[in-house]
Image (tube, rainbow, N blue to C red; front, side, top):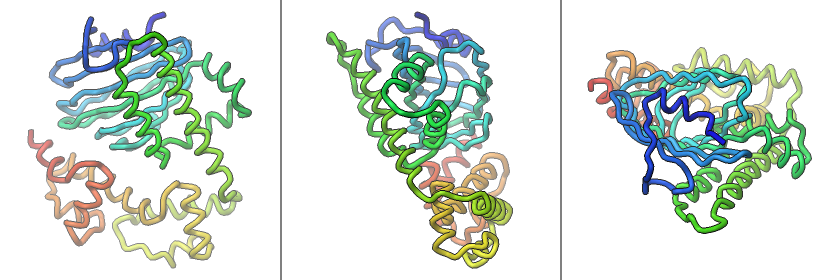
Length: 318
């Protein structure tokens, strides 16, 4: 059984290592040292699932594009990103430190922008058709459509904290004793269990009717258009035709974050683009996205991206 992404690794410039103490000997390690990247890719492959580790420094801005085969055995990939600076383009999603990132096979073409000067470090599980059809169907009373929703719902969700602990256990595992292969199967099943538990817990929360759902989309659109302004809660209540409590609870239920966090994330995403692509100073960028205090801007930037604005500016000068 050949790992289906090995050809892509070789095309990228990775070379297979016959022996490496960096990760478990149960898997296979590839190494790359080029003008664009420097680091490792490790995988452990079975007919039910694969576990992978991306661990490299991106030296300069890089667009990674991979077209999956229509007969790929991988149905969905769920990854925990420990460190990253980039964006997925299919569909668009900013990818930063300590988040769960999910991609589905039917998207076929995977496009990703990685920013130079930063590490990309992630651990992922590739769930294969056989695992979905046999194990999930047999052990969970869940339809394929609900399973997809559950995995989709874990994208950039609070489940990251629990998945992160699981990932640390995977990274630390080195045993090659008889039966040690069971470790990865247990961890993959635990990964799925955490994902499904989170979905069903969220499903018990507020059920939004279509009118309320559309109203919340209007609120989100207004925030996207006026993120740099001081947006009052009273105004958002008027837009949504909701009281303060209902708006707070409904918004968090739909977007998995508070209104304040939504505004902050929008501002920081725009700020990152400006820092990377313009000659504006940090203080100018800070004011442009709505922060009079540069120290407050720096604090929030570090919170949501895992790095400081000055590091981004320094990176662009290299």
